Length: 131
Image 1 (cartoon, rainbow, N blue to C red):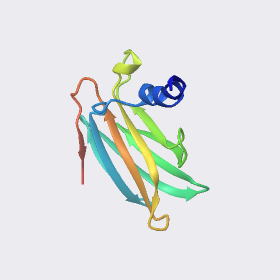
Image 2: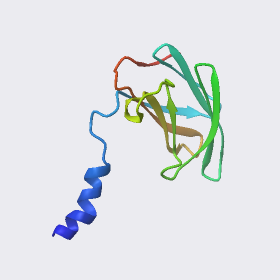
Image 3: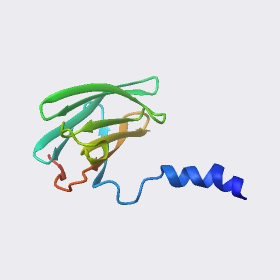
């Protein structure tokens, strides 16, 4: 019984996040080249996807005037993008960041599903959608 606990339950307890870990959460579904514009604190964050090929999604991001581009895949460890919001000399667990997670395609690969998570230990930032 102890062996069962060590191999199955202990890793689950160690690697699961507490329920209140994320300050804000948002689900987004986008068509190709459709923008999602969000206001994080007082800076704009917008993103879109342009190409879906070989289970990879080409993404374009802009945060506070700085462009980023990468490819997100459907498998674990390559399905998310982490963006630090402030470049301060803080310990890693005190840094505010946004995690954009790709959750797959739907409607015959025409819509991409995303989950957006905001981690802000100071609770001063807000996540608002701008239309």
